[in-house]
Image (cartoon, rainbow, N blue to C red; front, side, top):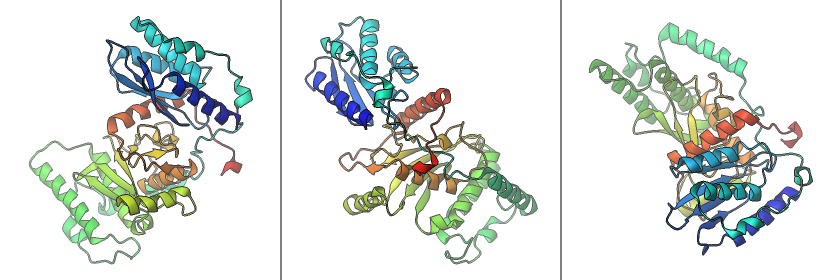
Length: 386
């Protein structure tokens, strides 16, 4: 646990060096996975930089982000995130402040000298494991999925069941009576959603309105939505799915249940009791080239700590990047894998912060972590770690 001890010491140090009343730099928040630094040099713009400390710190550099639109800041943060050595918090913070002051021609704070003190070697504080999520563990079986997709394609060719722009009588197909408990049955409220989507698509086609997305992506998303509605996980209320503004390309996914032996399970019960919220809200945005590219999925609310959820709500999972994505993956399995990842990463709900995450910040974090892991790869822990 030497790394954690050293990190705690560094966090206490920077909080003492840059308190709330500092005239140019303030540490506004500092935890074991997130540090927020407020820059407010006299005569300069006020902005915040966030440092996301990854689970396998200090083997790899932290992810640094900001919403401040200044190329000077962006270039420094990119350099920090792509560093090849010296990944400890204090040296990286020292580099950030030093370079910013140098490029902006500001006088560097005198406290910087205390951030540059000699530090122990990486080996001395290496815990020997790291804890990045194993994407392979519990990963979807590509061969099985591709086989299922082939079968689905045959079915589609035979009866056009999932074709959005076919000429069959959707109303008749969708209104067949069935019990929501029957295997493969779709509940009445969910059928209404599908019928509404088909009607809108037909009306748009007749009126020559531009089609959102692409035919391929729309057909696949209709299939995915229907499959979700038929799934046991959905019917058992493990999660729910609602479309945002009836947009097939924007899903609001609520994780309502996770492993009942995990602390997060207890947090979900508490969340419902004190806030009346039914679960963890994920937002999924699909592009027109789906399923060739992964959906962008992030946590919208509540605020979380750990669980591979970065400060902006982005989820640190190889599965959700172009490197780890496969067009064979189905959305039910992706949703369940995210739930498992939150548990494995020891995710907890932050009940003291009621703010929600936002799309722009989550997207920025996602782009940073994708770029970072593209150059460094993804860490796979030993099977013995679970």
